[in-house]
Image 1: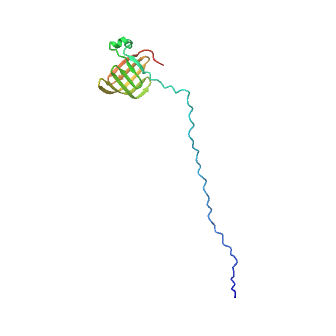
Image 2: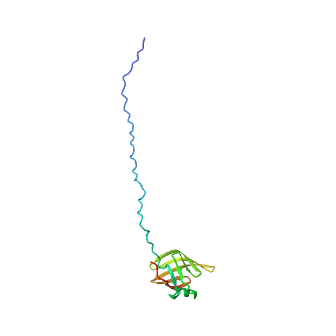
Image 3: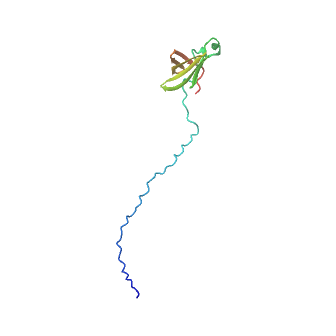
Length: 146
């Protein structure tokens, strides 16, 4: 005899609470872009020329060629160095305070070498050089280039 299988009516399965996954909002990232290029000036900015730059003599007469033959040798000073005759000083670590410039100088003359702190003070067309070897006064030779 055929067996009958009773099928039970489907029982409702209780609803299972599945936790809902909520994604966090993406972090806000500020847009980073390269800084805008600064406008290129039509000409380079003017660099202030140190007033001590030039040729200086112990007297006005010393600036002439004849005086050079008699031992009056003018000093030529640039932002990087000073030279008079066989003496050459290289400047570094310079700074300006008012009308005075101070810098370290490494000097040489005829095989002798020394280092010194140099202070240059300009007053109009007069220059005062002060270092460990003393103080010397000079006048500007020729017109100052502006």
